[in-house]
Image 1 (spheres, rainbow, N blue to C red):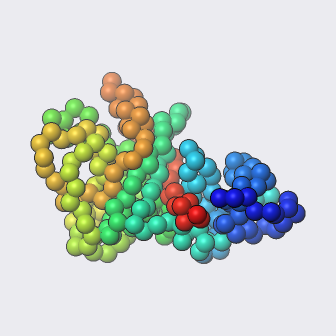
Image 2 (image 1 turned 90 degrees about the vertical axis):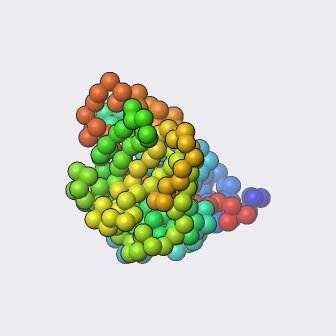
Length: 254
C-alpha cells in the first residue's frame, strides 16, 4: 500500500484507526515494533496487545492489565472485523517455566463451531483462556497415533475445560484426515470440550477424524523441540501455553 501523507503530529492522538497501521509511516511502524499499540475490549476493562511476528499482525489475548501510559489504542470493532471467519489463524506460544519453546500457528476450519470456540479461548473473549494452561498428556511413542493435549482452562488437570459454544458435536464440518498438525477435541463430551489435541505424526492408514477443526500451519519445529524436551522423561506440567491470540487478516487493508 502506498504511503499516506500524514505528519507525526496526527499520530499524537491516543485513539488511532486500524488503517493507520498500514500507512507505512515510520512512526506507526515504530509503535508496533515497540509493542505500544493495544486494543480496548468492548467491555472497556481489558486490553489486548498488537504485535508483529514474522510479518503477521497478532492480537494477543485480552487481559485486565492497563497498557503503558504512552500506549496507542485501537478500536475493538475495527480490529475484530479483521479476523476473517473463512480463514481464521490462531497462535499459541509454548514454553517451559524457564525457556521459550516456540509459537504454533493454527489455521481453523471455516463453518465450524469448534473453530469459533478455539478463537474465543485464544483471545480470552469471554475471559476463559488457553493462556497459562499446562500440557496435560503427551503420547510420543504410540503406534496408532502420537499427539499432545492442552486446554483445560478450568482445572488444569484434564478433568475440566467445558465447551463454551453450544452444539459443538452437531454443527460444523469436522471430517479431516489424520495428518501431523491436525487439531481436534472431545466435541461430544461437553464437560471437556474446550480441551484440544494436536497430532504430531501422520497416521499411515487413510482414516478420517470426525472431531478435527484445525491444522498447524507453521511451527512444526516447536512441536519437534517439545518432543525432544520430553523424550527422556520430564514433568509435563512444566510445559504450558504462555500466551495466545489471533492473527489479523491484513489483506483486508488492500
